[in-house]
Image (tube, rainbow, N blue to C red; front, side, top):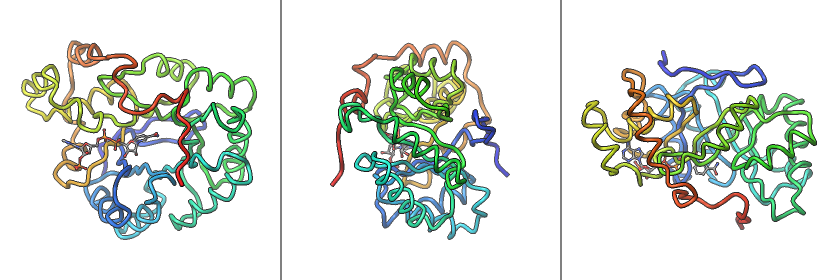
Length: 282
Ligand code: NDP
């Protein structure tokens, strides 16, 4: 029995608004972390080929004894595989590692506008194939800027179901979020607590003390009230539990505004700028 609300995607599917992220979880520890999250009640796991732990995600779901159909599983196409035939092979591999015959959501991890002659459109068309054949129930993008989303809108048939982007109080990314809202693209906020960097901010600590909640809970609740999807990562059971307990309190409008006002613009990014990022893992 989950208290987590679901959000409707533009293709009719529903996604749990709170999930569990597995970036930087050691492949050998992933099954255990995922099982812990599922035992606590999470039903949404966010992984990627780049994280090298898809096998552990599938194993953790099986170990937890939860029906595959009851868990929303996302993975992402790695940067080296944007050309259509490579993307097809990489997607087969993702499913093989998970040992599932479908994912709920498959994303282009980064747009890489400086690579592949700037062509992420044929990559997107390949994801459309995966959706048509039912092996990706929904498809979306990650780290897409407005110009990238506009290109897909002008040149392809399918509006991405989600755009997974960096969002936290030091980098609110509100222009890209607003574009998503206007075009039916759900925003997923990655590094929702900025990998811990926002947790000792005095504004956040004060609001947390007044609410009787932890700073992480306050920041995650801020995301929830802004309508974004979040999947905080932790390998610490107590924190995994804490991050799940977001639905028995509410922030005031003034508190939400105070967190939003912490935005530092571009200087607040913890990750790379998607317009420039061109990393291809070995
Ligand atoms: P998060 O913002 O989720 O922060 C994770 C860090 O915060 C870990 O060091 C964790 O420590 C710590 N932490 C977690 N919960 C608490 C808590 N309650 N109190 C104090 N510290 C806490 O960072 P991520 O970068 O992992 O982002 C979340 C997910 O977003 C990723 O796992 C991935 O799924 C996705 N992501 C996607 C990207 C993309 O390009 N699409 C890029 C980056 C992330 P510990 O584990 O030691 O407990």
